[in-house]
Image (cartoon, rainbow, N blue to C red; front, top):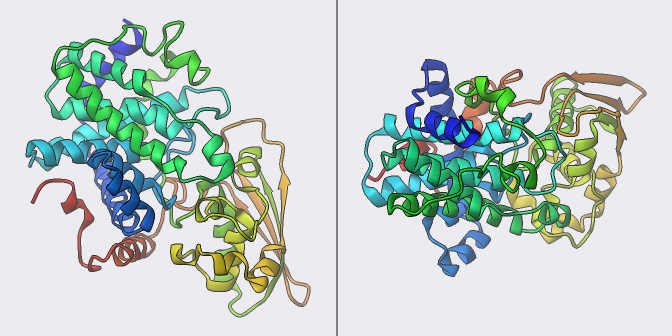
Length: 405
């Protein structure tokens, strides 16, 4: 059986168990809360005016604040394109069965994560978009009631539309969340085309010009047994910034809570090479907000100044703030030589306090991951803050936005 046939069969038959279903529900709620906050941004209004359709808009909104859930081993924001595609189909076709919608999303997320964990190469293409397009096609095809043959064509047509490179990440451009929007739209279109009988190549995953090796080097075969458990491994992001920044931000918050009122005068963070690559970029006084969300010196300065990361602070006045610049200069990043090109942990952060005190924070896992989950209070605070930014009351359950009213 080919890799495509394996994935198509799984997408059709997947019945998430209690743990996977609970994880999916929590992650969809988190994702749709982040969507509300993203829709309130000026950039989302521009995307809406461009007329790319609801899946593209939702995909963009979910990722544009860098607040969306991520499978760390896969380096895939697996919920984003998949949830956007599923929500679009639900609203367009009048799907009102929440359990069916969650099962479809769970299947799509599993497939997107699998493509990521199977990768052995560093990121060149933007994996949340390339893997996300295939996962989005799976979720949309599941909601359309596909059997294995039609599902295989949908997945293949998702691969045919997969796009998005890391250049947008390097430059800190809003093209990055646009690529997630493209992936969500591609997933819906792939399923619609397959529903009309259009076919995709049978070697779309592992053929000589399939997903592997063109987008990534890797092989799904050794990882197929993990299908069904991957959604429970997805991390929820506490702050609206690149995931690679969260270890240092967690360490700073831990020190602030343990030593209230103490001044932090130096931070030495020993981090994997991927962290250096993704968020170890210099502060630029005229940088765009999309770049600032991936600039750890700026993010550390916000945490030192405000004790949190507020997306409303990503503005020219903050980027040019001399006081914040001085705080950001207290951070030193050290490459720890981790041989895994996709690793975000472990991390070791040494914090020096005024007066000579020194605190060492060891982070075997990053806050928000299944190994270091958010507390119920932290999770509730994130949902309330995202709803506030999106203009919804704190009592609003974002999960209600998945299905038509």
